[in-house]
Length: 283
Image 1: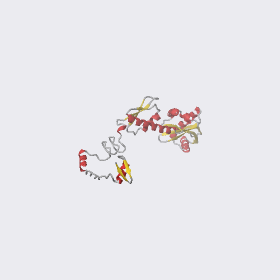
Image 2 (image 1 turned 90 degrees about the vertical axis):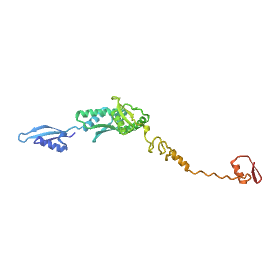
Image 3 (image 1 turned 120 degrees about the horizontal axis):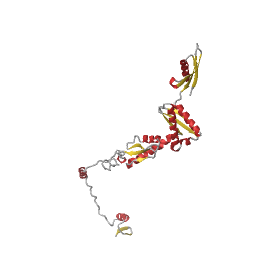
Image 4 (image 1 turned 60 degrees about the horizontal axis):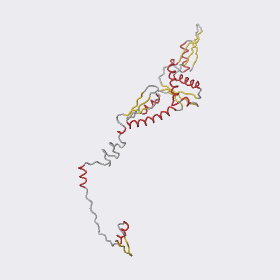
């Protein structure tokens, strides 16, 4: 925090000069008169101190807590429109994260209490270590989608294990746009959990990707598997009547003493064959 002492002929002049030097506004500082002198030509010394912001209080508390825990890591903070994001890095970051982020959640909760006690906090404070939150979000999103498919197929509710508020928020967000299931939180803290419930329209009622319905997979409708036009009985009978009958093939008499026919008959089988000399006959 910035601090400065300015001496001027009046309190107002000293405060104005101090604000100009610090580059702050009056609502961002605390000012007090530390010395006054002179009767004719008055001199006023004003001490101007920058007010502690939520950002400053949060980062000071987290780094002090890490030091008290004896961990070799440090925290940095950045302010955005929706929240203050604290990133922890160092050798003992895994210890600060804990099992499934339970230690990290405790540090985050304590930081919120300390900041709210000092100033009016208008943003969230999110503490992360080595991108743990991002990795956990990806894992939970995949889990939510897999269990949503299970709930939609079976038509039964699927209950998840108890989760902290951050993890429950990830599950709700992952399935917010799913039209086949809904999510609800049940139970009491710290055992509050999420239940994935299928909608009235089940998973089996989804239309096929090719735009077909009623179980037709080949592009037709109403069970027509041939993918073409469906004819009724009258159209089918008319179609059969207009079809031209096939002409019978004319069979030529076979000469059993023909040499070529005997060879073909021998290949196809059909009886014993004996050959005498050059000419072959069938018996």
